[in-house]
Image 1 (cartoon, one colour):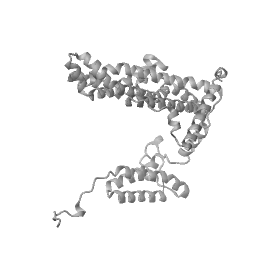
Image 2 (cartoon, helix red, strand yellow):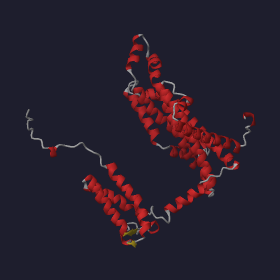
Image 3 (cartoon, one colour):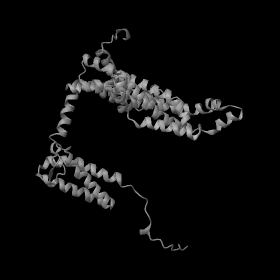
Image 4 (cartoon, helix red, strand yellow):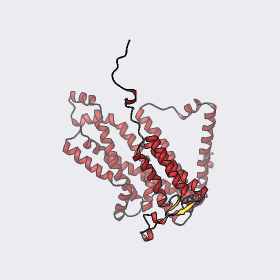
Length: 379
């Protein structure tokens, strides 16, 4: 059988489009990381201050230091990107990206890497004395309580607003207005909300709680309204067919469909608020952030490392528990118990799990001892 000639040349067949952006910037970032190593290894610095575009800014002057090796690296980046993409614009953009990095002096080993190394040495190991832990632990718990109460405020107000913001529940003039209000609330960052509330509520945990609560209303209201809009209309029509009114349709047909997903969003927002509450302490809105800023201000990096250590541990524990609860709510099926998961592993995984559990048990007992909690009745 003869295949008819359709006049299509193999070299003219369109290939599927492949995005070049990630590939380009992968090479650019690789070159940006490689430059400090080559720079420090060669040391062929040649100052060209006339090329510095910031030289006329007086106190804002940023020194520009060049060397021939750096110029060769830029040329190689441009050639490699052009070879990968066959695009002059992407090649020029990648070269420009690498070119402007030293103007901001971030790769100067006398400044950037030295300070990073010095601060890391001071932060770790952290101060795990009883005094340090007893001072930091209440602030960590305060951040968790701020996040929890802020999430509850957001959940309480966003739940009814979600039904008014859903397009399948209210007229257009109602849901459009509610959506714009939620968008306006969500557009203001928690940090700015806390700064605006400080003159009203003063410094302390209540300011951080209100800031997280207000921002959670906007975020949870938006997410919950989209969940309401995606319901199955079948149960709603069934309730309406037996004479159910608007309230009955919402109560027996809408809420059972949307509640598991909305509660999962509440838990996810709680995880976000825990991390946000640590930042709010920077402006005096309570929580562990205030303690961290205080320790850094007095250059007590060991105590600051203690705060970071406890904060990271608390966030990991809460995120793990919350993720497990969210999976249980969304799936509707009980997950295997930790003992079942443990027995289903191979011997190497069991050994690793035992090691992790032993480390966690040691950390818990150590913290309780440092907090001077009497463990004798428990042993």
